[in-house]
Image (cartoon, rainbow, N blue to C red; front, side, top):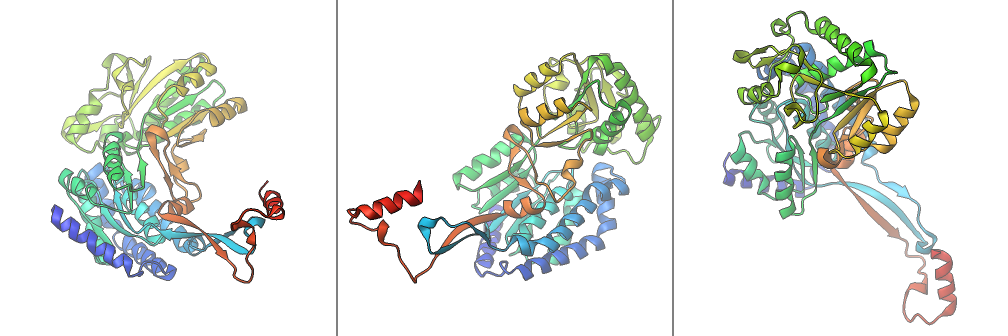
Length: 460
């Protein structure tokens, strides 16, 4: 789709939104039900597409993408009527007599730009929130996951008219053309570098933006942790989707006194979960393309590998890898890994770990394995990060009851459930002033001393 076609498409969506067709809650729920039914119909095809793009097994594709999306739709069908209602708030005595309330209204015409690592989930789930909030949407999936992107286009075009929900496929030219247009709201998931470009373009039109980015998410393991369980859960989260998860534990900060035991437990868990030769495991994924395969492979220091390190260049696969005795000077610590490499850094002082993390970029996630309540309290209160888990990884994003998002360098804004509905809505503040009386004290001339005393009584 070229620039002119994109401009015409967006004008169609503007005109459609102005009709008010998307505003009634019954309409929104009807669209969500249609989307749910079509996803169920296309479920097997999406499983195959995810396997083709990322090597995901059917089980992983449903657990981490299709199932979570269906859950979000079900949640919104159940709750969006309540979310869309106006909410009465307290009215100050000085504004007597009136009714004050907050009314959620859609932003209008929205743009959703999604990444390749979870191409179905991170496209359709924000779309669900946009629909529930009453918006139109232009969806731009990643060109790096062509099988899933083309199937989403086919499905969505079969459900919705393009003036309501449209899909634009393609690469940089299409991205640029879309960002040069004026939308009422932009939702972007992807890298920090592209996120900066999105924000620059949005600033030209003063368009509000949600950025779901990434970063180096730390995972702290102290000496009080249940090491066997910690290793099991960390291995699951680190190597899920071949490490290509924005909230995966990027690196391990392990207390020196238990580091060797922890590493041994991780080795055992890799074998238990992925087999003696993970590259022969058909349920273990692959790196998305050759470019990313080469980047991730270049971060492996053979001298520090204590497990794994094998690669299959032909199929863009890298075995689950552990690197020990890593320092911040190593290449693997210079960027977000986004692959199946687990660097282990040791520490002796928990205080020093907290102090050091305060100086680093705010991560999208942080994980702490411990039974020390003081450590839990310090991490929760003193460190800034998007979200995380205590004694687990990743699962904090798998719920519609909590918002998910980053902070600082890892993003801005949240979604999922009520947070997602609010993200795609403007909460309008309204005072409905009654006409049966009108207090005179606010009007000039300001010479009546009694009115001044009353005003001070109301406002102080």
